[in-house]
Length: 377
Ligand SMILES: Nc1ncnc2c1ncn2[C@@H]1O[C@H](COP(=O)(O)OP(=O)(O)OP(=O)(O)O)[C@@H](O)[C@H]1O
Ligand SMILES: [Mg+2]
Image 1: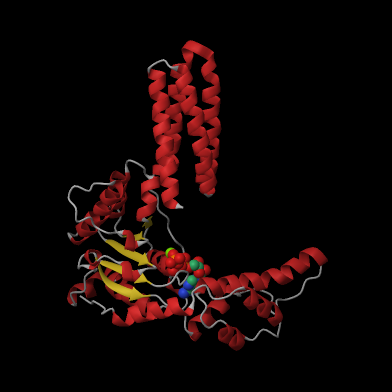
Image 2: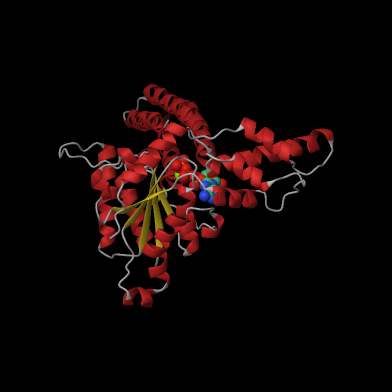
């Protein structure tokens, strides 16, 4: 999806440039052609995107069509088009190009299990920052990067956010394949800006998703956009060590066996932590959290829920709870009868929602986690 989006985006930008050029040449017909074309590509892009970006793209496509229509108006049209195009460009910049961050209001308490990962993050980053005097005494410094790996839906992104929440730091997020389409043409500059902004705070967390796509190019002449982005991100990570600012960086991947060794060297991601399926205790905690303050029937048996959810990820358990809740909710809406959630709602939910990670894939992760020697520096 992302690659496809990028292709369309390139098309769109080039079509817009052509439209402007045609205006410069005074070729109204050609300009109209390229404007309509840009609008139709933008519509496709809107269909591929979500949320605010989707809305903006739809609106922009509409405006481009209006500009193209107004081209009939002759002499003044050109300046008008240029103005509108500039306006659109600005609008686009403000939505798609801005370096933004969040301030998560979750903490480690909101995450069930993952004790190893929490401890590691605490030791290598949270505690030395919270207790600088003690850290100095025991020479515990804020260590490079922490790489979380494991199947989808196990809480990797959430843990990174919770780390930021835990130390009350801004949370910046990058995914290498996303930045190309999001910051087309200026990706490297924007990445540099992002890290610079991150460093401008006393403390911040930079989360890098899809770390497996950080594959440094061995070929000096290959300066494709993706390779330049990768090089830029790696250079920024290397820069962290030089103590420019206190930035914790946390990476995540679902395909650890595809990682490039260069990414794992000290100073980049120098510790790997497996984020696997939740154990019984963690599953119990999840049910308690996801069902907190809900009307529950006496028939609900947490021991049973824990048993039934063996092999389920955190995200799967969340879906099961959502599904179970929706049964009495639906009845309440349709039949006007309100009742608490009961055990048979859960039995139905478990029938419908199966574990998202199959056993073979799980085995592959387990095997990998055994062979991978944890590199504590
Ligand atoms: N350990 C956990 N504790 C509490 N909630 C969890 C946990 N793991 C997963 N969840 C639930 O599942 C959702 C998805 O988790 P998250 O996005 O962190 O997964 P992920 O490991 O980053 O997945 P992906 O590899 O697909 O990016 C969370 O928003 C949360 O509701
Ligand atoms: Mg994630």
